Every structure is written in C-alpha cells, then in structure tokens.
Length: 388
Image (cartoon, rainbow, N blue to C red; front, side, top):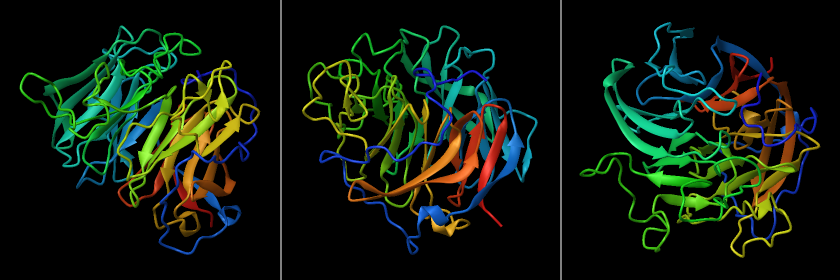
C-alpha cells in the first residue's frame, strides 16, 4: 500500500524503542488511572477482526448510537452496526475527493449532541475542506451540507485531516504545514496561516460566517495572527485524541527525516503552545536553527532507526484490558507494532510493545466504552482485546 503519511524513507521495521522521553520544558501529565498500575510488559492483547473495509482511515462514535462509523480514504463513511457492515454508505463523497498518497477522506467527528457529523477531506484540486451535515435516521442528509472551512494546500502532502471535539465542545482541526519537505514556506512558525496548526472553532454559523471563534482562543487579539489557531509548530499531526478521563490532548506529529514525536497538551492549557517545527524536529534542532524560546518539547520521541511515521492513538480507558488502564496506545505506520507508554510528571515511566502488529496501520478509534480499535489501509478494522 502507498504510505499515506510518508515524511521520509522508512527507517526500518523494528518496533519503536524508548526515545528521549521528556525535557525540562515538556508538560507535566495529569493522566489518571482508576486501577492499580501494572507494568506494561505484563500486558497481553490480541486483535479481533471487526470488519473489512476499503482503506479505513478514521473512526467516530455518535451520542446515543452503538454503531461504529468509519471513514474510508476513498470517500465513504460506513457504519458497523451490531457487528456487521451496513452496505449502504452513511455518506458517499467518492466523486469529490482526491486520492493522492496523503489525500482522501481523512477525518470525521460527530457533534456532542450527535445531530451533526463533520468531515475533513481533500477535494479534487487537493485542497482541504471541512463540511458539516445533519444526521437523519443513522445516515447523512445530503441536502443539509454546510461548508465550514476551506484551506488552500500548496503541495499534495501534509494535509493533517483529523477532527475531534474536545471536552469543551469545540471542534479541533489538525492541519499539516502544507507539504513538500522542510516546510519551505515557514508555515509551522507563522501565525498568519492556518497551516501547521491545531485549530479550535465552534462550527455553528454566525451571521454570514460559517463558524464562530471562541473568545478565549490564544491569538484572538493578536494583530496579524489567525484567531482560529489553538497551537502551532506542527509538521503533520497524524491523529490526536482527548483522554476521556483527564481531558488532556495527545498528538502524534510526523517528523521529517529523523525523529517522530508524541506531544501532550494538558486539559488546563489556555492554548498557544509552540511545538517547534520547522526549527525543531522532535526535541532536536532542525536545519541548524535555534529552538524557539517558547518551544514545548515532546513527551516521547523515537528515531527513524525504529520507524518512519508516527500514528497517534488514545489513552486506554476501557474495562476489557485492565492492565492497560491509563496508558497511551499508539503505533508507527512502517513498523506496525502497537506500543504503549505511561507518563508521570511529564516523563515516560513505562513503555513497551504490546506484541501485536497491524500492517499499514493508518489510525486508531475508540468506542463508547473506551475500548480501542486499530485500522489498516489493507482493509482491516481490529478491536484490541485481552489475550486469553
């Protein structure tokens, strides 16, 4: 399969090992555990095939609905209902999406009420579009489409594409730096563009504007800065999620040619974090540049000796795998092995491979009970389960 997030040549197929876990400027963690903490080396899991779809790339749950909604890269949203794939698409955008290596239908999220669904995709020109639809009887009402956000993409890669509603009820939109290599336009450090950013908006319209900007966004009153920006200095945030217990935001940010990183923003944050790109790759200087004075370093990183593209996941809060409670589960696209780590005071105190490999692992998902799923571009949607 084509590497949809390729940031450089894959450095190998070994499972990522523990990298530089923290620094004095890394954020602390409020990650909580509801059960006694066990060593991750003792965790045993296996993967249960739930469904086979066409290049599954994102998953979302809808309030009051037990179905799993999965976005296929090729442009459809499919529902897994009562263990079976509903053959009728929830939404079909196949005629509207571009299908380059890092393009397609890249993300979806339901509003907290479940009445609306939002999608993030690259259109036939390769530009980013976020659109919203009303839900009717478990499917999208096509006539309800509302265009929320358009972003011109200067290159075909680094589109980001994830969507997630935060505990605050706002929609978080992750955008890559616009592509090419090395961020030639300097978008990551520029507050005048939406590229290379985490955005935070209220996606409901206001007058003739398609969305509202929260008044407490960090750059609302700064001249020359886009007020949608919540955080910046990101290269290609490929999958981020909120810990359903603490509200902390975990971001997997794809590196250039040497380092992959995991960043954490605490629920108590007022936004404005600078994650360093393109003056830093992970915790390291990039291109000889001095790190920004306000740079927030990753809580975890690994080199391309152990993978090539980080795939961000979730903090496990389910009940089925109790020994995994409170651990962040993630992977690398090239290596495919599921990894888990725990933080304490901003430092990795435990990290271990979970012993399961998903080839072409593209994304993770979480259901209403906090159980986790891994998706493969080869078609499989797998649930993480305890080994018997």
